[in-house]
Length: 359
Image (tube, rainbow, N blue to C red; front, side):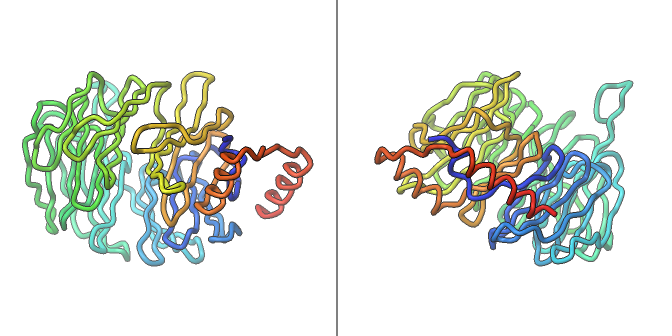
C-alpha cells in the first residue's frame, strides 16, 4: 500500500524541514533549515507562522511554551500566538534541549576547526520564564540528554565517555560505561533508558552491556517491547528489553525511525531511508519486521509520533500527517482487494486547497 495515498493531511513549510513534533491534542509543529516555524491545529488549519534566527532543531512543549534550539540560541515561543517570549545565545551551538520537572535544560558545544574537534561543552538550566539558573561546563560533549526516573542524564563523548547525571544545582555525577567508547545516542521509555555507542555497543543506565553490533549506533528508539537501533551500515535492529535480537532490516542509511500507531492490532515501526537518489519510507510490524506499507517517492528526514498521529518532515518542505483511523480503514480496504487508484483531478484539487490553507 502506497503511504502517500493514506495521508490525513499534507502541508508545506516552504523550506526543508529540520524538525517536527505533535502535541497531545494532535496539533502539529514543524521547524525548518532556515528558521521557519509553523503550527497547525488538530483540524489542519494554520494557526501561525514565524521565523527564528537559524535552523530549528529540538521542539518540545510545556503548557503554552514551545522550547526550541535554533542555531546558537535556545528559544521559547508562545504556543498560542507564535511570538518569541525569550531567546538566549549559548556558547557555541545549541545542540539539544529538554524540559524536566518544569525546568528547561539545554546542551551546547564549541567546535574548533584547527583541532577538528569539540573543545568545550556546557549544560544550561533556565526557568520557563527565561531566567538563567546555572551553567555547568565540561570537556566532554553531551551527545544526548534524557529524562528518566526523576533525573537528567547525559551521554558523553571523549575523554571520559560513559554517562552522567546532573542534579538540580548543576553538579555532574559521572558514571563509567561498559566500554571506552563515546555515547552517540540515547532513548527513554518510562524507566527504560538505553545508550548507543560509537563502537556499536548498546548499554543501559546501570552500565550493563545489552548488545554489541559491528557498526556504530546512529539512533535509538526505546519502546514498550524493547528498542530499535539504527547503525552506520544502514541496518535497523530490533531488540528485546534484555538485548535479545528480534529482527534486522537492511537498506540505505536510516534518516529517522519511530514507533507508530497500531494497525489492526499490529504495533508498527516507521522507517525513513535515504541513500543517494534512493528515498524510501516504510511501515513494518514491529513484532517481526514484516512490511505493511511503503512509499519510494517521499524524502522523509524527520518523524514524530503522538496522539494517534504520525508526522513526517521532508527535504522539499512537505509535512505529511497520518491518522490512525484513516490509515487503518485504507489498510483494511487494500487488504480486501480494493484498489486505491490515484485520481489526477482529485489530487490537483487537494493541492489547490492546501495552498489556500497556507495563505
